[in-house]
Amino acid sequence: MSKQNSWVEKHRPTTWDDIQGNNKAVKHIRQWAEDWSKGDKPQLLVGEPGTGKTTTATVVSEQLGYPLN
Image (cartoon, rainbow, N blue to C red; front, top):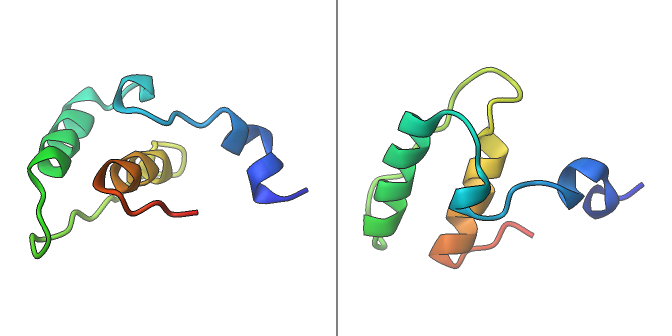
């Protein structure tokens, strides 16, 4: 089964409004992404497995126009 066809990828949140939980962190990262311009410092996402790091990174990359796929 390819990654794109997995249930997780099919149902992964794709917008800021789709992301649930970690509201304070998501709000901070969203503000950073909205104000980001080339040359700004990156964000480092750390945490336990299953806390939304990959999903958040995917939403940020799409918003900034640098899709991961």
